[in-house]
Image (cartoon, rainbow, N blue to C red; front, side, top):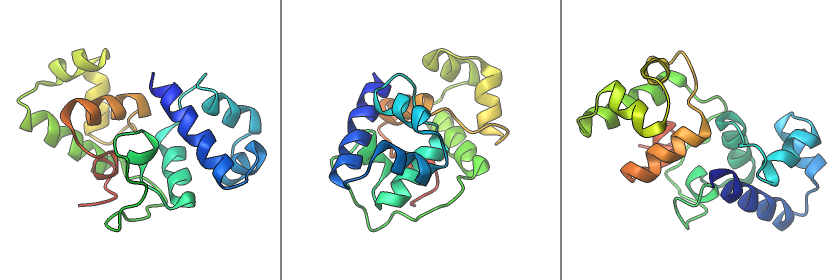
Length: 150
């Protein structure tokens, strides 16, 4: 589901900007075939590439994930490299505000407590699909989760 939504939106953005799949793949530093898989929804674009794409187009990650209908937000900062520690701190904040244990959040995301712990401690960058699920369920901005706005 997330893959399909992302695919449709990133294809529309590419076409609206008169770019080829090869053009966008070059911008993101990936092969055209990898980008094509993201666009058709066969694979989910990693968060770091989603961030890069949004920076390039000057739009919010929330717009691309259809968490918001607003393309632009003047409060969004352009961040070249997402900081795993900031994202982890924000995940922990959401979890604690919702009185969830690591195990409970892991169960909601259909993953393990150790995976959530790795996200929260900044050892691992959260998967786009999990970030989307958290944002959707707890009604938060992906741009906020990633430290792109306050």
